[in-house]
Length: 396
Image 1 (cartoon, rainbow, N blue to C red):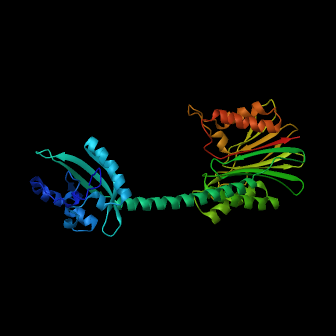
Image 2 (cartoon, rainbow, N blue to C red; image 1 turned 30 degrees about the horizontal axis):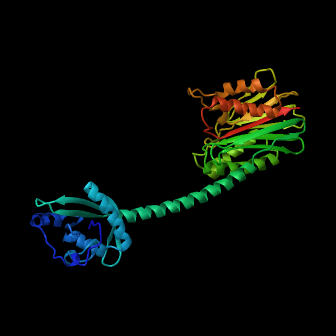
Image 3 (cartoon, one colour; image 1 turned 30 degrees about the vertical axis):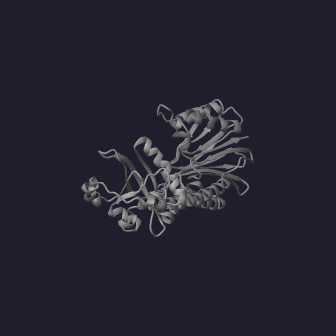
């Protein structure tokens, strides 16, 4: 099987001589699951076991006496000859190749070849063929499945990009309204997320702003968040009091979505047009902050519990009223800011954010927003692991 040149006309008529030692191993070789041939020094097959004959699809008697140049196509023979040179130098070779079949097909195999000499110094090549067609078929199937998965993943990625654009289009914009200025920031930990914010003037006399945090960070959370966004828009247009609004959102999620894996928290604030009066309500959300430059921020704690789990999560006393003065600033945020961990494993927490808010309250509102985000990022080790939302309001 391993040859260095095509057989000459004379060689093709040389009688096949099978040495006696082959008779001693023929029974063993016939029991192997691998195809085996033995070639003499003239590169002619002098023995073929039953498994190889089965793999080729021809009787062993038709194969014995053939040369590799008669068995393989010219290009295949050239490749085989190149490996035979290597085997002559090293005494052995192992490589992946094909085995011609009587039907004209090519069976994928692993060829293992070794050169040996008998006691008389005559050279022989012992070649084993291991059928790897099942592995090749499995590889082809795996490749096909991977290609399908890649196409599907691209479709999902494209859909997520579109979903991200839609979600970003719902993010509140910075604005000046009545006697107030508002700055906003929204950033999902993944392409889309469960955080959202809303800043909406209504009835010409009031401005409502809200941040909401739906548990999770993926597609399901984003769908719930978008559904809640629509509900909140409707409720704000009707002028529904904030406490009632949170209670109604709680009932809506429990009745319509009815999935315990989608809990959410929310914090909402409503201001009169002059910005002097504020009503706050929260459900399981981190406390809002009211800060006057140069003073420690006041915390407004949520009186309601986490939403989406208990029917009585929001009580009758959910609302808190606060008076504001020019220069006061109100900060609403999600726990993506406070639950940031540094390299030592310490969490920034509400106290850490409260300190940052106090130290940045003298800055212009836009600069205050960016500095808060920069300070949180400087504290945090690595990229954000949770969605982040931040809404700042300044009374003018």
